Image (cartoon, rainbow, N blue to C red; front, side, top):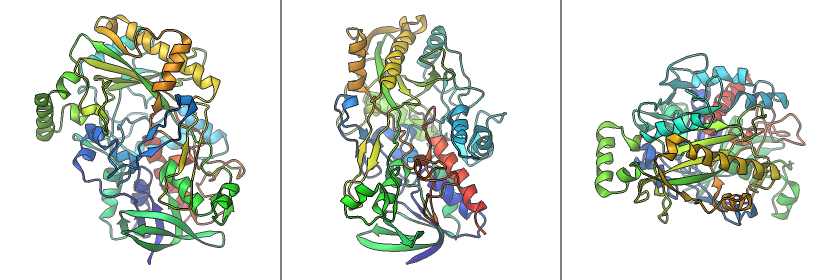
Length: 538
């Protein structure tokens, strides 16, 4: 049996940060349990390689949501990272913190210390932003952020011009003074390689004698003495093992695995646990509930100018960009598929944006089985303008199906289950068409391929986005933070209500979703959570 001060379950965006910060002083011993294996794989390190990892069971849990009435009955594919770095090792690398108002709302809901002004110093401290330091950005931190301004595809400039013609301002930094507008995305890479949380935080920590990482170690149960968490049971190479924590057990499994492990351990909705024959250690109806996610759709166009399709599709193009990447760590393979994007309001009277845009200088209408066809796009010059909602009102849940820790939990997303979500998405897709109709884009568009010019009525547009929408992989809030144990799972110090020695520190604690991609805020949660843990050590 291993004995240490802290056990961290999960080496993802938050867990990697925790391992680094809790071990930095040398005072404490840290054990990290990761269900997956190494991140030292070519398609993990190569930024555009996430087209290959999207269905790869070697590095991906490959979850599937329940058939969703809101998505025309589709059962959505939910990739999550199953390797060092977690989902930060297989994501699209777009670096968006979220809006000031998001975090201020967290604080206003009874979570002191989580307002934007509280968190800004932490964001700046963890960042090494290539765009340089200013009032909002940080440099010199562990997480390198690449400024892609001079690397994006030429079509991106037309998208930015069209966005401005449609009434949006040009925004040089979505993590700066405000989010609204169109601009080029910053991404988490360094020298053409993915900058996952494992690369930024866990790799430096592993070099310390007081840090040990166990891979292929599936946590199956939290161990308790009375109402105190004292260790973790896990499966590794067919054997059941235990580890004991002298100070705390910290769950950083993410929005699926953290509530799953709590439920398997007897913390969760009492009727669910009793029905599965799991002894109730502490009843809490919120564990696995309040699931929030961003849902998105692409509008795809056939262009009159070459796009990345003409480079990435033919064998000689693949060879050319492959050589460019291997020799110089530059070119299309060193970037995210989302070169640019933006934020806009579907209601001009609203105080802040509620929709996010994505621009992709290639298209993948023709699917390839078992692979997200980023590296094999369509044979004609295509590009896409995508969007996703930022703060939908629909709520779902993630609940275990059995007491077997290997059984995947039931993911019920309930996408578009409120009229407000349907109404704002209808307005949003109309705005995408407005951008495409602006002179800068219209003059190079041959035709709209998806959904196509025949889809014009509100009923048809709604039917189309129900059929073609899907998660954009930002699930949060399944172990939400809040002061009231009747409505939340953890308090503002991320301690599980009703249990001692146990915290949840990952995106599952978000009280509500944020405006934009969730990886930056997940890393921030690890950073802030580590500070809270260290403050509480006597």
